[in-house]
Length: 301
Figure 1 (tube, rainbow, N blue to C red):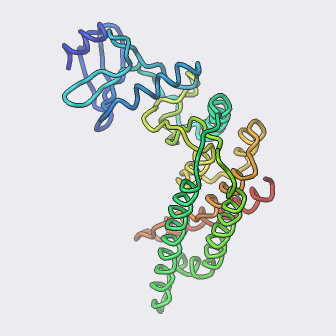
Figure 2 (spheres, rainbow, N blue to C red; figure 1 turned 30 degrees about the vertical axis):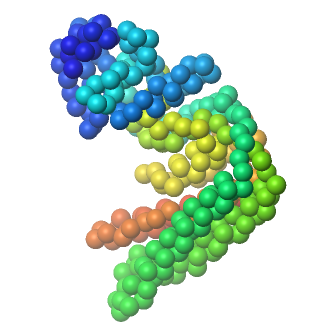
Figure 3 (cartoon, rainbow, N blue to C red; figure 1 turned 135 degrees about the vertical axis):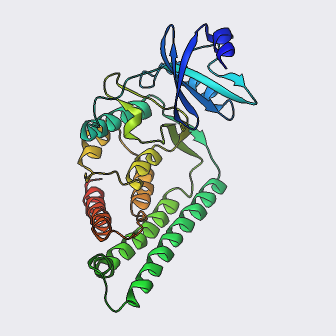
């Protein structure tokens, strides 16, 4: 690989650290870089699109000698970017704020309409109903398991007592989906934009004001980025005020987008109980807090 990096990028590697299975930090005579391995050339198209739109919210990726962003390597591809020191601490609240501000920028500057047919909506309906049914089955099975326990733990009691809220949220998801399908039954186009689709604190650099990963960037409905972050339920408790303050005040969602977003937000995230009772209580408390936030958020839309 050293010879190829020298040939294609003119850099001379003197050391290498594995950051993940497909990501490496390189120490070079010219400075520090990060190398990423990918299976195909989709990143090339993504970066060309970013360049065309003059997006400034992504880490800079180096061009090789062929003026391309990706370079063939052992039946796969690699791309290279400067190493950015992201060790200024987690600063989670600030990173969430920056994330929503940047999403608003990213979406606003990449919106366009694309043609669709009714088969698109039928496929969407099938996929969402499948997820909703899976969530119903998952939590119903948990309740059945706990009902057969004579001496329930506090976290098990919490779930039993609050199951109705999970059930109501999933029923609401179905209702919003029906309203969305009714709203779009005559639609022949939808609004799409560039989606980041990879919320991760470690991929946000406040110092350089950019996202450090581009592998999951794609074109899709704007609400999928919003749905993605809340399905992950981050480590800390936070409500949707950040969403409203830093995204919704800059991006006006269409009525159909609001309906689909309300549907997706009501699809209750999965939680799994382990052996640590305190951790179980924390997980369910976060879920209940999430449900409270969703109810408040929908009233604001």
